[in-house]
Length: 253
Image 1 (cartoon, rainbow, N blue to C red):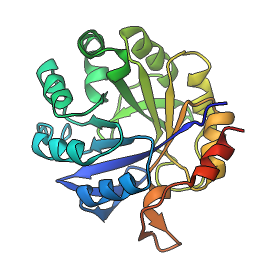
Image 2 (image 1 turned 90 degrees about the vertical axis):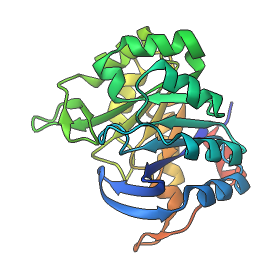
Image 3 (image 1 turned 135 degrees about the vertical axis):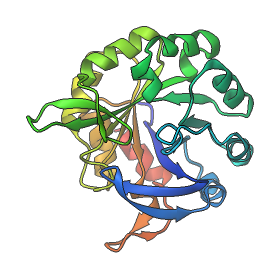
Image 4 (image 1 turned 120 degrees about the vertical axis):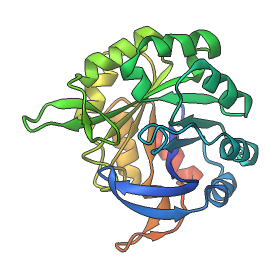
């Protein structure tokens, strides 16, 4: 059995990396170049970098920083944040990024995903879906770091994104984000059971057992995490880590 991918998901704000709890309560982690170098040494499978301010603040992607990160990283990189048109896609891919990650624009104009797939291929087209339970306990796709309601059912939206040509989904539970108490396996299963493209589960990982659960119980193709790889101890001291090769092999069993 193949070893599942385990992917650090890093959040970019104003050229620095942060980590959140339930998409709020940000804690500064440090310079992204230094953290990428550490993950290089730890031979991670791939990295996801999401600029959490670009779309909300109507900013362009930080192309200069993206180029520096891509030149420093030894592993495949996915980037999301502020990607609005095919020119942005061309520029970012030209800087050395392997995967374009789209969130807001995928909801505003689903055909944009088809345009990216036609230009760059399905394998480079990724849609990030942020999910939160509403007051009635029903799952809903949210925008703008969870602050904006869309009314969209995430399962149906995932189907639409697959039909539009997305080659992969990143599914993040806002309710579980940063809590390190486990993934929302229910919503992962609901989505992986109805689509064929890979799903990267994100939001809630605290232990290797959680990573295992996302893959073996939820059906995710990969386990993404943030806090688990950047914090140590109850006081959330910043310490970059990554599972050992033996731990990753155990996940395949």
